[in-house]
Length: 270
Image (tube, rainbow, N blue to C red):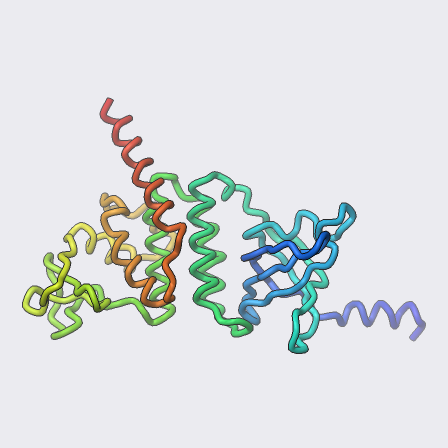
């Protein structure tokens, strides 16, 4: 084999890049960036993109937040890896609209919290990629439903989603009346709703059950006319318990969605 042929053989033998979504970017010194990606094959990986800010950098336009890339990292030797290559797969321009961007950032934060470093969780990666596509394309009035559906799906992946149909104390099937304790995540029937307790509305349970029992593709067209904010407090409490974090963007997101739904209602009433 000639020298040129050997070189081509080595290049062709180079392992392909990892399918990754950019979760975080932090400036490092004057010209570089530290980039955290979620990958399907190896979980969350952080690497240094040297010279990423330079005008002639091969990383320009490829490391935007939430961009899908094929990423090649240096081997793990116990320190910070190098991001050696990044090829843009998909740039989600539809997520630049403010409320969609808020929703996508919230989802990215949740997936980041759920993932330990360098441990693959393909289901969480698929949830992030599929969720970003849904948030980019769904009707604006259905963003809240999609967000709640994604939260429920993530809770289920983490094994932290309470039974939505049965009492956590006695197993009795829950009807229109559901309750929760302030210090316990599960739902209970009236007989086991000891103080302090909170009643969960039938509308909220109807929406959560419908979202949990349907596929992601159905969420934007779900035939349940219940505002997302009515059901939002329950997943918020479950997520805080599961991730030990209180997502700071979530209250802002649902405030925007609430104001938007009121605007639609006022417009249709005039």
